[in-house]
Image 1: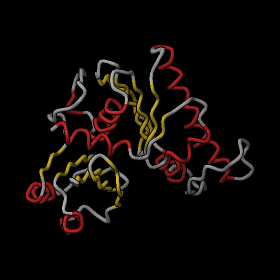
Image 2: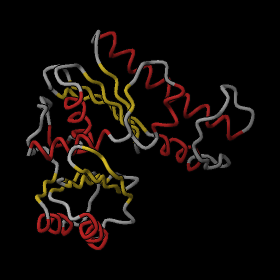
Image 3: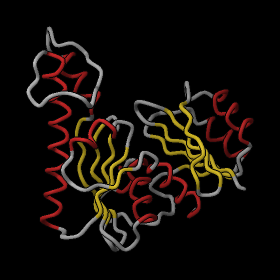
Length: 240
């Protein structure tokens, strides 16, 4: 069965999903974006194809290496996509957002889809039933909010996220957890409700590394999938 490597270079983590056919078999966290790290993965999995989504300034030698050993595609605004991008400057759309909406139309074709990505930032990405990616919104993510409270105050600590906390915080830590995680949950629900007023019927999809902190606190019905970006990358690799 054909093996495909789907690389996702984000602001927080560098990851690679290993596909056998259409199925995710393993997700790897890379220690760095060096040629050695990529070579180790190539030697272990012997892939046929690879695709790279990157929102960082990585070494272009990685692309040369992947192109030498696989049928390689770098995702950007010139890629052939299962969606159209009728926006003012399509070249400014993040590769990660393109992958998310590609996954949505692959899973739910011919339907309105709102894809919510929980990473360094929260991205809301709306693709309509005509497979037009219309845009959405971006706001600070979980770690960014915790870090900003620590960095821009004299005494607030830098705390680790935790899904289990009370509505009414009883100390500094639980006050911050309630403020950030419940605040973001209400933001997500509020944005979903705003879309519901405009589009009567759509799917709300949730993904990203921080997904588990929010799913228990959301009131709206959502389709949660931690591998959504990789499934979108795989779909785009097939499309190209």
